[in-house]
Structures are given as C-alpha cells and as structure tokens.
Image 1 (cartoon, one colour):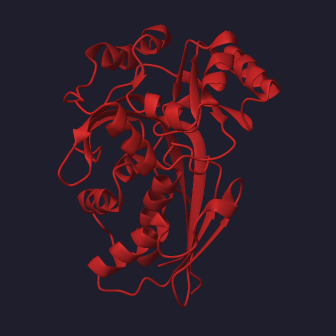
Image 2 (cartoon, one colour):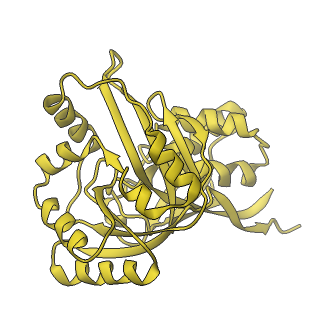
Amino acid sequence: MSASVTVRVPAKVNVQLAVGAARPDGFHDLANVFLAVGLHDEVTATPADTLRVTCEGPGSDQVPLDRTNLAARAAELLAARHGIAPDVHLHIAKDIPVAGGMAGGSADGAAALVACDALWGTHASRAELLDICAELGSDVPFSLVGGAALGTGRGEKLQPLEVGGTFHWVFAVADGGLSTPAVYREFDRLTPDAPAPEASPALLEALRTGDAEALAATVTNDLQPAALSLFPALHDTLATGTAAGALAALVSGSGPTTAFLTPDAPSAQKVADALTASGTCRTARVATAPAQGAQIIRSAPKAP
C-alpha cells in the first residue's frame, strides 16, 4: 500500500478517424488511428473515507466532480472487481483541453485506474485493466496504452502501430465546447450511407517511416464536416493555421480543438504564434508525438 500515487497520462489526436454508419446499439464502427501527444493530465490517488474527486487547471470548472467523472467510475469498477470499497481521493491536475476532442476525460479514467491499482495493491493484469478501460469508454484503452494504435470496433480494440520519428503538432483550443454525441448525430444526418471504415495503408506507412509530409497528405477525420457544421468558426482557425505554414490542419476527434501538423519545432512555434495572434482560438499549444501512455510518476510509500 502507498500513501499516494500520481499517474501521468497523455492527450491524443486522431490522425485518421474513419466512421461507419450507426450500429443498432447506437455506436459506430471506426477505423481510428490514435497518436498520443505530449499534453498531459496528472491524477493523484490518496486513501480517503469515501470516493471523492477534485480538479485544478485550465477548464477545471467544466469537469464533473461526481460519480459521472470517468476517474471516479474507474475507481468504482476496479474496486468492485476486487471486492473492496472505492474509498479514494482522486485529484486531477488538468492540462489536456476540456471537451476538446483530445480524450481528456478518457485519459483521466485510465490514469485513475492505474493509480488506484497501485494504491490498493490489486495487481490487476494488463488485460484486466484494458477490459475495464473498454467498459469505461471507447477512447480509454488508448489512453492507457499510448504511442500509436489502430482502434477498431467502436475504437476500443487496439492494434499497436510503429512510429518511425517525432511529429510536431500545434493544437488550437477553441472558445466553447462540442458534445461528442451531438457531433455523431450531425454526422449521421450528413452521412446517412457511410461506408465501412478502413485504415489508410498510406497513412500507416507514413507513421511507420516518420514522414511528416506523407502523413499530412493522408490525415482525415470523417467527423470534421459535422463539427464544422455545428461550430462554423473553426473554418477560420483551420485557415489561419494553414496560412501560417502547417502541413495539414484538421479538427481533433469530435472537436472543437483543431490540430496542425508542422515540419519541425520552429514551424510549430510559428503556427502557434499566428493562431494566438489571430483571435480565432482561445490559446494554441505546441506538442510532439508520440507520447507514452499512462505511467506512474510518483509513489509515496505508506508510513510504517
């Protein structure tokens, strides 16, 4: 047992998000190429008399602190499997944009799961952790794994992908949020006959070789038209980043964060500066990819 455990977990960008038609269960089949990026949340688990969630950092006022929070649900699911009470204080230090299409909530769920497993000494296997992650949500397994992966099914079935270099990204955080269910409903309206999703061989090869220009030529997001329909101001953000020299510009996941792939670190800073100066976004963040999945960064031993 530990006195506290802190887990660091990355954001994600979808370099390909191919979306099929709605299934009878309401989900959509996906070919979802995840890439973990170096924007991180940290979740610290400490013993408590009951389950409690606190949060600090940008956008923390938008984070639910009740048991709808994925971090709280992760603690409950792990505790239930091991026959213990989910008595833990989970403190989330946010740096991943909230409601921004970068899987911040999913990341917190994965981080809480790893933190509680270490805090409680439940010694869950990797397979058990991934199974709980899939129960929590479609993006949560990738937050645990990190790196790069192809997600199929509703995104929870992961196949690790090789990445041959470092990619430089800029993320423009929008003023306001987008509801993922609303974006999918708009996708269904705009694309009633969506074909079966397939991963792009050219995109997977670009990742494998670390070729930013080849990756830029192949990135796609089937949810982008729906996100732009609901949040038209994103057109201006995408145009600004492109004009500043980005190799590719796309909506990240369901949005409204927009992602810009650049050739190198100086180019990334130039694009970020242009976006910040343009007034088309709240802020712009520079990050590299790939990044490691959820990992313990601090563990304070329990006093004897």
